[in-house]
Amino acid sequence: MRRVVMALALACFVLLPAAAAGRPVDETHPMTAGGSIGIELVSGNLRVIGWDRAEMKITGTLGDEVEKLDVSGDGNAWHVEVVLVRGKHIRGGGTELEVRVPVESAVEVETVSGGVSTEGTRGALDVEAVSGEVVVSGALDTARISVVSGNVKFRSDRPVKSVQLRTVSGNVDASASLAKSARVEVEAFSGDVDFALPSDVSAEFRVSTFSGNIKNDFGGGEVKKSDHVPSRSLSFTTGSGDARVSVSSFSGSVRLVKR
Image (tube, rainbow, N blue to C red):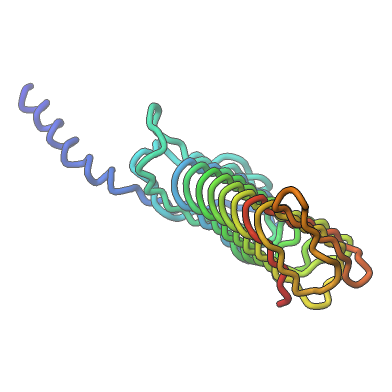
């Protein structure tokens, strides 16, 4: 009996380092073209890619402290959660996931610590991150991105309709054209904002910063300075002013750039 127990103990000892090295993930599930997916990731990096197949494919590696990858739902709506081992905390990381979804899918992501990138999707995008950089590219017209500590990079090849980009501690670098009657809000509390727009953009702009500078490549309006605090503000309209654009930074500069 003692020999059996020792053999089992040795087997577990040998297997532990392999488990700690990370477990591979490779799953494929059917998904409709206009479906939705919600992804929850505590610690690690996530990449979401749009493709022309009617399926969702998840590949990558689970980190040391992950108990399982929980995938639930159906072809219209999926929920993907990286579940930590009970009692474990956010450290170590090691999870690296790539999720491919139909290009028109609506995507919602929540993460605590790690980077998020999306590319090639066209459906509505919603990302909430505590710590990590968020990088978005593709042809989407609706997005809401909120980060506590990290940079936001946003690129769209399609005129946007409704976009909110916010970071508390980090910079925002955005580039997009505007659909008629678009509503865009870009905000960095502690960081700079760079927003590139077409030279013929038609919008009403409201720009402000408390302790930074304002650079405007589109002309029009005058940067107003306060007599008592180092704040600056700028309001101007280009074209017929159909869209509304609000750009602000508390501790950083704002640059509106022609692309």
